[in-house]
Amino acid sequence: MSEYAGMGGGDGGRPMARCIRHACAFCTLLLAALLVNAARVQLVQAGTYTGNPANRRAAIARYQQPRGDILVGGRPVTGSVDTHEQLRYERAYQNGPLYAPVTGFASQSYGTTFLEHAEDGVLSGTDPMLQPLPLWNDMTRGRSPGGNVVTTLHRAAQEAAYRGLAGRKGAVAAIEPATGRVLALVSSPSYDPAQLSGNGEATASAWARLNSDPEKPMLNRAVRQTYPPGSTFKVVTAAAALDAGVVTDPDARTDSPDPYRLPGTRTRLTNEADGCADTSLRDAFEWSCNTVFAKLGVDVGVHGMKNTAEAFGFNDTGLRIPFSVAPSTFDFRVDKAQLALSSIGQYNTRATPLQMAMVAAAVADDGRLHTPYLVERTTRRGGETVSGGGMRPVRQVMRPSTARQLKDLMTGVVREGTGTRAAVPGAVVGGKTGTAQHGVGNTGVPYAWFVSWAQADGAAEPGVAVAVVVEDASADRGEISGGGDAAPIARDVMRAVLGR
Image: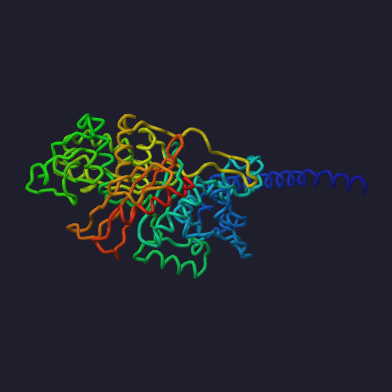
């Protein structure tokens, strides 16, 4: 019996062992297939699954922690509200309409704009520079706490600009000439970005209402709207004429008939002011004589005007502060009559308020133009600097001697010309008024412009350059003027910066 059992056990063991080996091999293949499929899903198809609208994991993770803050004058103008819902944290704003052109909105339904968009990586905590242990975060799919964005804004200047516009359609941009720091950026009318933070019916209703509003409160007029700059563009034309040697003495009489017949046409250009015929560059600048500057533009020529305008920043499609700025334009594919109109800020010449603040800043800083920027630095939640500082691009727009002559001309406008309402006690102020026609047949209410700079008495250099545009369709056409409507706003912004 024992011998029979032993023989039977031996014969049956070998097939059993083979079955076990086969089962092990099959399980190994299944395991390998699972690993390959997992790798395919996580590496090859990860983007597809992540971007699938039905996948809410990314959105849940994004709003699972508070967003970092945007700071003005060392204090946050944003925050986060715990809703205790699946998308847990919603964005909150302090003085939302005041800072909307800078912050933009961060919406669970409609995405992000302006600084909320440009600095989203820092604010949301996904920027690799915020991660002390990047490999560990990749393995755990963890997210660093949102960092903060420290802006260059001057709180008092921002408030003065917003208060000065008082709900009228228009915009203000202010720059520190020696650095390019943006001190104020205001657009009016504005809106409260907190209305768009959530994902419910109220948010959808606010979105529809804001987008259908004919006043366009979500349009950032300071950087995304271009206007005919009118007579404020005469700063550019004067710079071109002085640099080219077309004018060598600002006090010498010019050969400028009044009216001036546009070359190749029967159209006669006239002036609002009297005494513009053959007047000097200084008097023409102070009293904004169209005929003198139209002829100067033609005398300089298309090439010279184009080079000067582009040195100031016109036709630049790549300006970012860090969000994009609509390009200001100077059309150089023009005949002489069109060039004459372009040289007084009409025809196809268009500019953002930020661009015209850059023009004033270049004059103030001896012809140097510092690229404007809005973010001073970014930090971790605890305040440690992540990025910021360093040199920003600067270029010489005109000869320093030309800039000094223009500063003298601009101070004359405020001292005894059309911009006297921009004067600031205890400071030297230079400015240029502008009244830009628009609409079919120039039937629209003119836009009121004022560009300026100010230097406090005893200061080594100008502290602020400002551009203001007011487009108020309810105003009386005869009462619109850069000196009357825009100059007082610029004055208040300059006083806020200088502390006067």
